[in-house]
Every structure is written in structure tokens, then in C-alpha cells.
Image 1 (cartoon, rainbow, N blue to C red):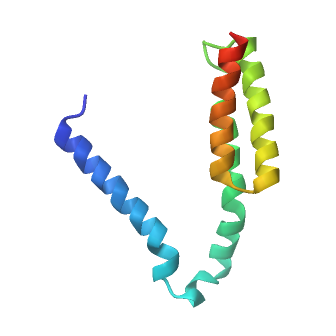
Image 2: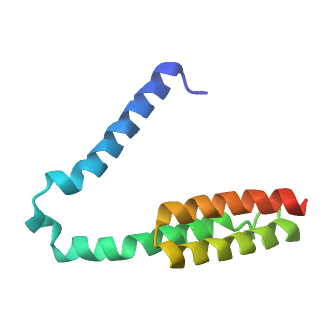
Amino acid sequence: MLSTPLLLIGIILMGMITLILRAFPTIVPQRLLRQRWLLALNFALPMAVMTILIMASLNLFTEQFTMTRFSAEIIALVFVLLSYIRWRNVFISLAVGIGSLNGLLILLQ
């Protein structure tokens, strides 16, 4: 178990990293943001995040595998896909995925 000072240090570090990442586009000159590798990263990152979320959400190879949970996961992934196609927003799709999976698990059990 982590002690309170370690938890506070971790929270402060995560907050600082988040602030730096949020401020990065406004601090860095525009000519650097137009570099080919940053444009490619900006294009590929949303799909990479969605792929990671999909792979992490499936519990196919765990001891707790049930067909009910698998069905709920597949339906939730369809909702995530549809929301991403509709709004092109990773954060909305993330919320839709978490909400629909939890809602479906409650309904199906």
C-alpha cells in the first residue's frame, strides 16, 4: 500500500505532466507543430487510442470469461464505433463505451 506522501507526489506529477501536455500546442512555435512526424502522430493517435481501448476491453482470455460479458463488450464496442463515426471525439466515445458497457452488464445480469 502506498503512503500518503507518495500518493500526493504521484498526483502532483500527473497534474504537471497533464498541464505540460495541454500547454504544448500553445507554447511551441507553429513551424515546429507543422513537422511531418507531428502531423502523422496527430492523424494516427485517435485510431491508436481506440484500438488500445478495444483490445483492453475484451476479456476473451481471462478466467472470468462469460458469454454474457462478451456479448455486452461487443455491443458496447459497436456503440463506441458509432459514436466515434458520428462525433469524431475520443473522449465522447470513451464515455459512451464505459457507460454502455456498465449499463449492458447491469441489464444482462
